[in-house]
Amino acid sequence: MRNIRRIAVILVVVGLIATAFSTAAQGGGEGLTIGFSQIGSESAWRTSFTDAVKAEAEARGINLLFSDAQQEQENQIAAINAWIAQGDVDAIILAPVVTSGWDVVLQEAKDAGIPVVIVDRNVDADPSLYVTRVSSDFVHEGRLAAAWLVQATSGNCNIVELYGTVGSAAAEDRATGFREVIALFPGMQIIRSETGNFVRTEGKQVMESFLSAEDPANICAVFAHNDDMAIGAIEAIKEAGLVPAQDILIVSVDAIPDIFDSLDAGETNATVELSPFMGAPAFDAVVATLAGEELPKWIPVAGSLYTSRAAYDADHQ
Ligand code: GZL
Image (cartoon, rainbow, N blue to C red):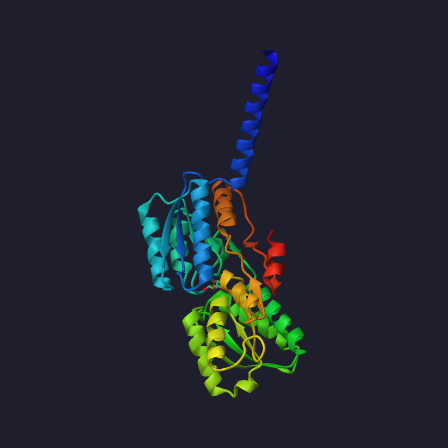
C-alpha cells in the first residue's frame, strides 16, 4: 500500500513540474488583451505570419484584437487609436506598412501607458516610443540574394529587380543589401527596377513590361523582393517562351511553400528564408515589458538562403 501511495505522490509531483515547464515554455501572457495591427494579406508569407500569430495567441490564452489594414497606413493608425480609446488593451503589436508617419500615434500609445512592440518591418520613429522590434535583417537578406547571384554568374549579370512596397523597410533594406554586394562586381548591374508591391499579379505585370522593354537575351536574372512576385515573374517568363531559372535566373525572399514547388520544378533558383513565427518572441517581449524588464531595441529572427527543398527540410527537422 505504501508503494502505491509513494508512486501516486511521485506522479503528482512530475505532473506539476511538467505543467510548470509547459507554461514557462509558452512564455505566458494568458488573459492579456493585445491589439495586433497587421499590414494586410498581400502575400502568402503575410498570411502565414498572421496565422502563426493568431495560433500563438490562442495557445497562450491571449485575447488578440486583430486588424487587417489592407496595406493602408491610415487604417493601422485608426486601429491603434481605437485600441487606445478602448481603455482595456494591455499592449499593441504593430507590423508597420511603411517606415514613416508613426511618431504621433506611438506617442499617444505611450501617453496612454500602452507598450508597443514592432514586428517585421521597421518604423523611422523615436526608439523610446516602442519597446522593441522583432524582425529579420532585411539588409542581410539582400546581401545573401546578391552573393548567390554573383557566384551563379561569375559576377557578370544584367539584373531586373521586382521591388517591394516603396517606403517599406523590407523593400528599401533588401535593395540596399543587394546593391552593396553587386557594387563590388563591375559586371553586375541592375538594368531595370520597378515595384510590384510584394503582390504576385503585379510581379507578373512588371516582369512582362521588362520583357517587352528589353531584349530578353539581355536579361540575365530577376531579383524579386519576395517569392510572390518571383512566382509572378516565372509565369511571365514562361508565357514569353523562355525557360525560367535557365534563360533567366531567379532569386527571391520569404521561402513560402509555393516557392519550394517552383524549386522542385526547376523553375526558380534560390529563396532567402523569412520566418513567419514572430508571434512567440513578440508576445514574450510584451510579457517581459509588462513585468518591468528592459529589452534590447531589436530581437533578430534568422534566415538562410536555400536552393532546394531538401536543404530547407534538413535545417527544419
Ligand atoms: C518582410 C515582409 C514582406 C515579405 C512580403 O519582412 O514585410 O512583406 O517579404 C510581405 O512577402 O509582403
